[in-house]
Length: 87
Image (cartoon, rainbow, N blue to C red):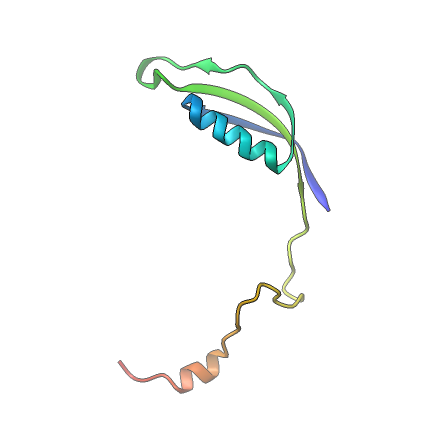
């Protein structure tokens, strides 16, 4: 298992969007630092900027040599092409 240590994220959105994004990111890992919300101005009035730093655990990705354990069926393309009807 590897991890993303010190992942830095700048979020921009409404208060509700920032709360939702922070909740999801925190659930995925550990919140190390949360900055202060800064109100944006001009055409972005009503939106805020927020800085987060997180540690998120990740798992190694599956390699091509490992069997497909996703539950889906594999298609034999040669057989499918041989039985294909012309359009």
